[in-house]
Image 1 (spheres, one colour):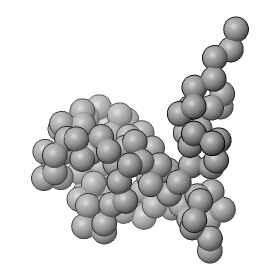
Image 2 (cartoon, helix red, strand yellow):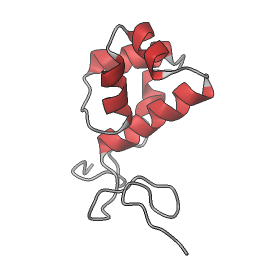
Image 3 (cartoon, rainbow, N blue to C red):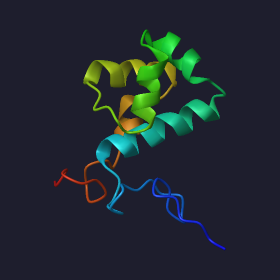
Image 4 (cartoon, rainbow, N blue to C red):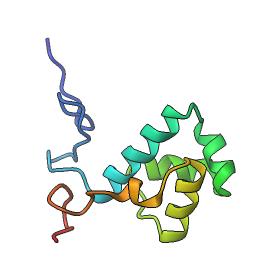
Length: 100
């Protein structure tokens, strides 16, 4: 029996309740989470390195926050990547409301 989760489709993509494509915030959050896990950091550790609260990191990773440039730069530094790496490709054809 296959169970379908409304947050994660069969192929692992994050979906909205209506099955729409992920938002820019969701795609950004996914990249932050993937990089954090690759580095072996907890949300608490990442938050401390950025000077933000761990619940804020959680809401970023879940796509519930539209973060400003300052936070993007802080996250990138803490994750040891260029800020552009976290944003590359977001807003082209893959995110709602972000037409070129």
